[in-house]
Structures are given as structure tokens and as C-alpha cells.
Image (cartoon, rainbow, N blue to C red; front, side, top):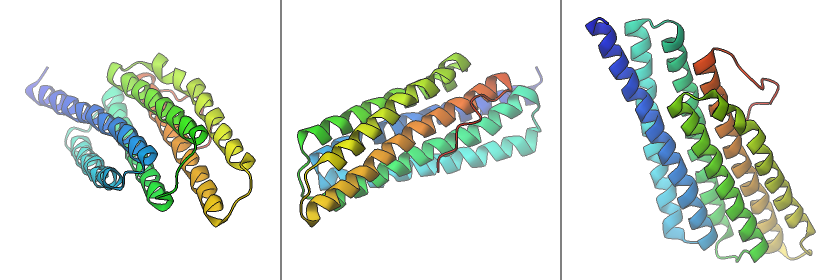
Length: 225
């Protein structure tokens, strides 16, 4: 291997290592954001929103370095697929961070209303499912394992069911005043944010599968914003 190619692969590894680090930050955002939401802790909520800048900054840094590697090295085959996939995976991770900012802002809008045990239990389960899917997606990326990536689509059904259960709980609540309606709307939105997080994890898995195999799977599933 020439020195140029060796340097390229070292830089490529640094980029993919930073994608893994970004995935870790996204997991932390889900955990911390959910805890702040359930606790109604305004200080913790502001911290989650501020910490999203770390995810955004890392995404921009990875993106810039990836474009430089493409321009300088003109990679082919699997190396090119890796770089293209990096750009897509960091987009999914950045959107996960953005959705946790949305959850945090919903917590501010709900303050100081109290959530009953049923809602709290469902949000907790959605947090666990989102973290599990994201960790699997990042494990697939780190291990270059398309089998792990393929499992994500089936796992996503669990999150879809949880979102439906939360929505049914909101609709089945007895009618109340304006505060109750406001809470119902915000909870429906929060359920949607977690469902989107899970979808972004699935999308990251699909890009990993393409990175390794050069083929896409489950292309009929609609993309999430």
C-alpha cells in the first residue's frame, strides 16, 4: 500500500470513528431528553437543547472532512460507498438530535402540568425502544454488519405499536379543559418524535447495508423528515 493510500485509510477510519462518536451523543440525547421530559426539569431541558449543538458541530465537521477525502482521493468501490454512506448516516443522527430538541421544547410547553402514570410508562418504553434501535444501528455501522442492519426494520414495528398505544391513550382520556387538550396535543407530537427517531435509526441501518453490500433493501418504506 502506498503512503497516500495508507494516509487515506487512516483519515477514513478517523471519520468513521467520529460517526460512532456522534451516534453515542445521539443516544445520550435520547436518554437525557427523556429524563428531563418525564421530570419536567426546566434546567435539564435547557441543557439538552444546548447540547444538541455538539451533535450539529460534529456532523458539519464530518461532512467537511468527507468531502475533502472525496475530492483529494477520488475513491472507488467500497471506499466511495463508505464516504457516501457516512454523509447519509450523519444526517440521520443529526435529525435524531433535532427530534430530542423537539421533545424538550414540548416539555417546556407542558410545564408545570403533571403526566399520569400511563403516559409516563409509554414514554419510558418509547425511550428504551429508540435507544435499542439506535444502538443496534450504530453497532451495524461499526461492525459493517448488514444482518444487524436488516433486523432494524422489524424492530421498528415495536415503536410503531407504542406510538399507536400512546395515541389511543390520549384519545381515550376523559374530556377536560383547555389544559387537558393542550397536553393531549403535545403528547401526540412527542409520540411522533420518538417514532421518527426510530425511523432514522432504520434509515441508518439501510445505509450501512448499502455501504457493505452495494445493494439497498426495503426501498418501499417511505422516508421520514
